[in-house]
Each structure stands twice: as C-alpha cells, then as structure tokens.
Length: 211
Image (cartoon, rainbow, N blue to C red; front, side):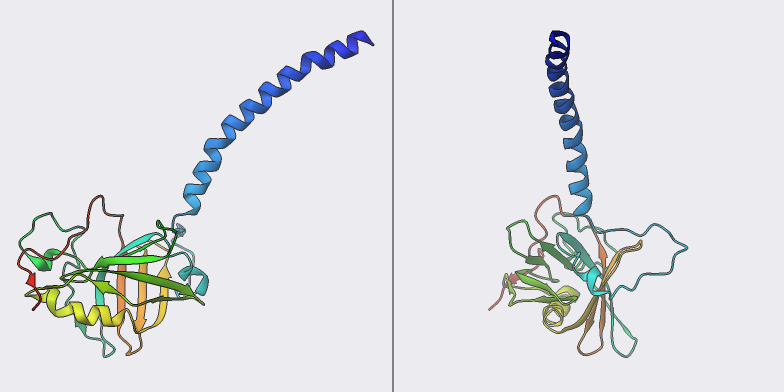
C-alpha cells in the first residue's frame, strides 16, 4: 500500500510538467490558426472548376482586405481609363496624380466596419455593410481638394458607384479579385493588395482647395 501511494505521489509532478509542456506547445499553434483564419481563403487547385465569385458566403470574407481598382468596364463593353491601374503603389511625393491607384480598404480594426481609400483626388471614409452576400456602403465623407487630370475626372463617378452596387463578388483563386456590378450594368474589378505600410496618398501634389 505504501509503495502504491508513493508511486502515485511521484507521478503527480511529472503529470503537471507534461501538462505545462503541452500547453506551451499548443499556444503558438492556436495563434497561427487564428491568423490563418483571418486571411482570405485561396483555392490552389488550378484544375478545379472556378468557384462562383458571387456566392454570398464569399462576400462575407471581405473584412480586413485591401483592394485597388484595375478595371472599369461599362455596360456596353467599353473600357474606362482607370488612373494607376497598373501601379502596385504610388511613390511618395509623386508629381503625377494619375500615378495614384484608386483604392478601397475594408477594416474592422476599430471594432466597427470602416471603409477608406483614395478615390482619384481625395481620401474617402465611412461605414461598409456585408449583408445577404452584398457589399454596400453608408454615407461616405472625403477630404475636399480639387484635382486636374484623370483622377479628378473619375472621382465623382467612383464615389457614386459605391452607392449603386447591385451585386458584389470575390474571386478567391489567384489572382484574387473583388467584383462590383453596378445598377447601370458597369463592372468594377479590384485586385487585392497588401495593407499600406504608411499613410495612403492624400490629395495629389497639384491639388488645390475646392472653392
């Protein structure tokens, strides 16, 4: 009986050490899984059929994603010029406003769904909504600068487009894309981009205060 009790007592510290060791190893794994869960899923099987980008479940994955406008196709099939469509990032202090891509950031960092971005001349900001597979926006505010060039010309139409979205979709196979179909039939395509390391561009250098 004494031998049995001594054996149980000697095993208890070992069990506690094993439990602590298991917990210490499990913590990094749990953190890694949490980070992966926050990223937009990617389909890597190129031979599989393309997933439907307009599946309502795909749109619900848009939280904490960052996009730049790369194509604006009108309802009649013609293409509209998009400033900075081929630029991965606009260099700081650039003299050309058309070098700045139009961007859209969707973030929950503040605890609420907040949209922001660059609309061609100004920064814009406001709330966004993901409901029933549709991305929509509340009333958007913006800085108030006037610009000359393609950025200033497209800005008003772009902001108006964000308030007239009929369908929204997400292409999860590379290259990942956000698709917005407008009520007038126009189609806006955004490419995914990394979050900006610093402040996104404000008004272009040739901008002047709106009168």
